[in-house]
Amino acid sequence: MILLDRVTKTYGKDLSPAVDRVSLFIEPREFVILVGTSGAGKSTLLKLLTREEKPTSGKIVVGGIDYDTLKDSSIPMLRRKIGVVYQDFKLLPQRTVFENIAFALEIAGMTRHEIKNTVPKVIELVGLTGKEKQFPHQLAGGERQRVAIARAVVRQPKILIADEPTGNLDPKHSWDIIRLLEKINKYGTTVLLTTHNADIVNKLKRRVITLDHGKITSDQAEGSYRQ
Amino acid sequence: MIARKKVDSKTISQQKKSRRKLLTFYRIIKYGVDNFIRNSWLSVAATAVMTVTLLIVFVVFASRIILIDTVSELSNNVSMSIYLKTETTDKVGEDLVLEAAKLSSVRSVTYCSASCARDKFAQTNKDDLDALSALNNATNAFPATLSIIVVDINDTTQLEDFVKNNAMVLENISAEHTPSFAGERKLAIQTIGRAVNFIQQLGVAIGSVFVVISSLIIFNTIRMAIFNRREEIQMMKLIGADKSFIRGPFLVEAIIYGLIAAIIATGLGVWGLFSSSATLASYDISVNSTVGLANSYWPLLIVAMVVVGSIVGVVSSLLATRRYLKI
View 1 (cartoon, rainbow over the protein chains, first blue to last red):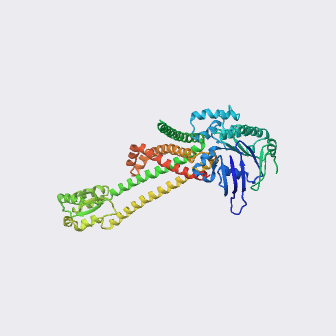
View 2: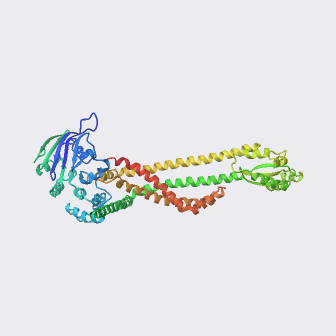
């Protein structure tokens, strides 16, 4: 599902690479946790996957799409196949819960009928039924993250990238979000999660990839958090 | 059968595509209108700035037309005189009028005989008793006059040639009085002519400077508005929105600013023009044709203002969104 072959990303000529010859393979339906200190290269790695950054060298293939042959005009199409969730939610502040989720379908040119059918199901999946008409600022942090997740999965992407989704949440709500990600994974979506939360990493018992100074230092099948 | 099916599926997919495009277009407009309403505070500010700009454009153009009218009226009143012998007959005078009227640089010619010139003098000096008594004592020594209004008061060469070379003029021209464009008054007339040109050019220059400055203010306002929403733009990019889908609503918003601002600015401008026309006219400023223009062409005026406002807004939005779309 995700294949990286000796991928390197250097920002400045004299700086040491943010991502250094990383090779990685993630199977379809896998649930993978990416850990590492700040500046270890997690964010850069995710930006390479969403094509916000181009690698300095190396090969990236996601969902059968080879990034080397990907045209700039096709980047929107690629991003529609990958769901992304961020620490700061990145919701549209002037739009309601329903509109925020519907937006992901509208940009793909779906009809109103399709949107009316699909969005309520996703809202139910993330447990926000009844809050469709509220604006992001009226919601609690955990609820906002649910909206972001709903928006990411409403197009039924094969891959969901969650970049520190629990970074701004208290432990209880963090666990709600993690359970939701597990549920989404169970329905068949590959999940790539980054987190600083040792408790979550240790309890989940999933594949853990540790990054340090841009390099993979460990890759365990049922891993735990190590600094 | 299979071939027909293929064609059918092709047309169906094409229909689907064009329907999708239409839907996207509709959504871009809807998002633009929604953003305008939901960011009401920002919309009010941007519309206000644009209203001021369009009002400046309106005032610059209106005052330019008024200036040109006033100036051309002034130069219409600057007549040049060819003085003829006192004994010139009306018949000869009328012939000379016809001759002079043939010149391309001449707008109009009137003839005033010696006695007519005397009456005019008496009329203009009716309060000056000394001048009147001098007039009564004097013999009728007034020259008959051809009063000529030229098209361009800076260009009198054709007229000078006419005076020097036309046989009929040479036969009848006054020996004591030189034509007014040839003597000292020529300088005065040319000075007026140059001043008129200068004022018109100055008007264009000041107008352009105002328009450029206020366009920059609009650009800056829109840039700030878009700067405030840069994360929103980046987020839209990250979930896979096309550039046109992100940019479109901003352009729609800019057009709405232009639309509302144009209507307000035209309303204010035309109202200001109408209500000040009486005052302006009392200062001998020619406002009538401008008021007339505004009266009969105001719908066109609004359309032109909408176009100007929208273009400035759309160009500003395009420039301002460009940097955030590069991901």
